[in-house]
Amino acid sequence: MTGGPEGEWRRLDPRTLLVTAAVLCGVAAGAGVPVAAGLSGGRPLWQAVGWVLAGAALLVAGGTAADWIRCRRTRYLIGPERIDLHTGLLLLKRRSLARERIRSVDLTANPLQRILGLTKVRIGTGESTGGGESTLELELVTRAEGERLRRELLARPAASGAGPADDGTLAVLDPRWIRYAPVSFVAPALGGAAAGAVMQVSEWFGAQAEVIDWIGDRFETVSLPWMIADLVLLATLAGAVGALALWVEMWWNFRLEREPGGTLRVRRGLLTSRSVTLEERRLRGVERVEPLGVRLFGAARLDAVATGLTEDDDEKHTELKALLPAAPRAVADRVAAEVLGETASPTSAPLAAHPPAARRRRLRWALAAVLLPAAVLLPAAVLALLGALLTPVLLYVAAGWTAVLAPLAMALALDAYRSLGHALSGGHLVTRSGTVRRSTVALRRTGVIGWTVRQSYFQRRAGLLTLTATTAAGEGAYDVLDAGEAQGLALADLAVPGLLTPFLVPAETPEARPTSR
Image (tube, one colour):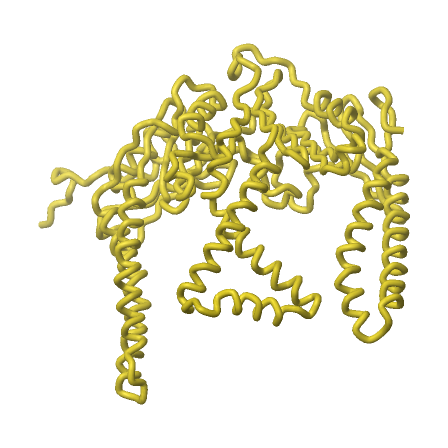
């Protein structure tokens, strides 16, 4: 029983067992191939295959039976004030959430679940409690039931004059955005993973040495540095292809919508469909993220700064808060303005520059990062020259390290300084920092619940400080790095008047100084 009127106990869809059996068959096949290959070394192939098939049948039958018991013992009730979930075999586990506290109903369905018309429903309150006590999961119900639950549980009376009045589509996928996928940080990571997967699979079949020899034969007439460069290039190309495929899977059919009742809904996914709903009352701002490769092409990603997006969710934290994939920066700024209900985007507001002392700090850090390893290599090179080593290899390494990395480190340091900035744009505090990953955060001033002022010994000598805005959303704290002392304190006092005032000490005037007798 998967449907019925409100107030009636309902059960999960029985087709859940088909999904479980199919997944276990895939697991058995994936594990059975290397196991059969290993067993066949000491016994006939037919015997090894027979053992593997028997184990696979036991795994599939046992797992499906266990899931049948779970489905039979799981039921949920949508009441007028609460939603209840009962599950468990020997120990009955009862969970209950007040409907007025429900803030999100997210739907996820992988390809097999989509074929069967099923979906996983995740109901959350937006609270960051441990152990998943603030969420209920229904795995699995029909797609129609999931959509009905989402509409019913998120239904809110329209508040007069509260929030943006224009419901509808805020952004849809532009296929041209796929050009930003190969320049993301995902591409090199996927390339390394592909190389590791080839070596791992070859090890399963006892052919790793043959694979290494085959690679060596292909580069027999190539010098070692060029061989390394070629392998890195091949891994990068493989990573770029993988990044394109991953982007298509994650972001195809993307649509960002504002729905009646004050919710934002993100729908996306080619094979695995995802529907994430964010209540706008939980929204405290947005973050425009520009990884270095994406930024060089004038693009940026947009994330939500909201309460209740915790890292212990089944879905990745980044996936839950993503509002827009990497898109042209102008598009990201436009979407940010519409999400925040502003006429002009705070993320594109002109920012106040930080003092030159902040630039000097970054240049010193860059030089230290380059020269310290070289300082370790140089004494070793001297000792090597005094010994039996006839070629000053370490000396060349130290000189090459400095010559190649020093200009790069200096360029990144200057870019990091240019990235620094802050502003007050309407009702938002804006802060920007970072070079490899530049981040521009527009935080609602009403969402700032506290300030932390940090000042190291070197910052104090340079007249700088780091101002941290504390909030109950997103990362919990957002920094204004290396601002001037007067500049940072004035910003905090203007952003949230009166919050920092009791802790500010007025400058001492000559008239106020005590006179000695």
